[in-house]
Image 1 (cartoon, rainbow, N blue to C red):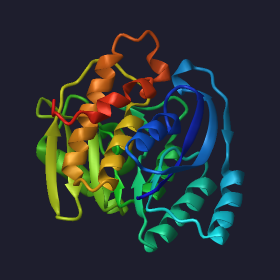
Image 2 (tube, rainbow, N blue to C red; image 1 turned 180 degrees about the horizontal axis):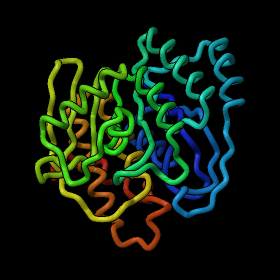
Image 3 (cartoon, helix red, strand yellow; image 1 turned 90 degrees about the vertical axis):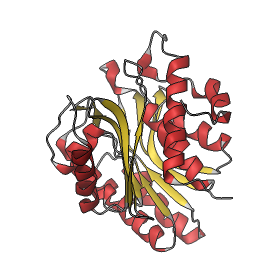
Image 4 (cartoon, rainbow, N blue to C red; image 1 turned 45 degrees about the horizontal axis):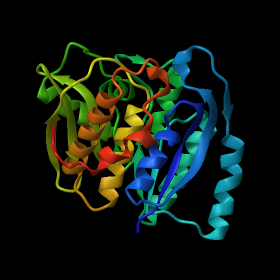
Amino acid sequence: MKQILLINDVVGYGKVGMGAMLPILSYLGIPTYSLPTALVSNTLDYGKFNIQDTTDYIRGTLPVWKELGFGFDAICTGLMFSEEQAKLVAGYCREQGALGTTVFVDPILGDGGRLYNGMTERQVELMREMVSVADLTFPNYTEACYLTNSPIKMEGISWMEAEQLIDRMRDIGCKSVLITSCKIEGQNAVVGYNNHDDTFFHLEYHEIPGLFHGTGDIFSAVLIGHLLNGENLRKSTRTAMDTVFRMIDRYRDTPDRNKGIPVEKCLDILNSNDEI
């Protein structure tokens, strides 16, 4: 049974980050361990928040784990909060990757053509460090543009431009790439590149208007869970897309989208394999 380490922030008020990923991965049968990059009081769009950077904790924990011989089949990284933290985590991922660990990187930076509240260009630089060690990275369109210094065209791009954007992501150093939340020739789509068979693919989806926090984390957890359970990248991506749609649809009328989707009440959706 494959086990995974999540390196991400822990949010006190809001079902995002590890709080969204842990229930899903556990439900899919993946033993899951955690290394927090920060303790965050609440999701940032509430306007006020408190963040406790855990770089000191990471600096002290990684040598202990190495001494104890702990290892993981996969690592998934999320938000980074300092240059030292990014270098520590990237170095650990390189070290573990050389031993056969699969490294997933979710470069959490922004959406809708802008950076998230509290994110800066410095975070973009730190995320490039993380993407460079990834076996698979899955930015949304906005994040891919920031990471590659590409112009953001919210009105949409062509399929050729989407594949060129993937190539620029690969130039950073990652192997396989998914770019989510793309508007391509009038269609909402995820575009991907699978390093294992050197192929591009496109998957279209229906969009439910509005922003729910934590949906990227849900997508990541479902995607990774199915990959670790032996499914290929295209099929795992389709499953993750459809799962996110169903969860959003179930809670589309919730009065406070800032705190995310109550994942534990949606685990039954993970049993559905019907494409939307």
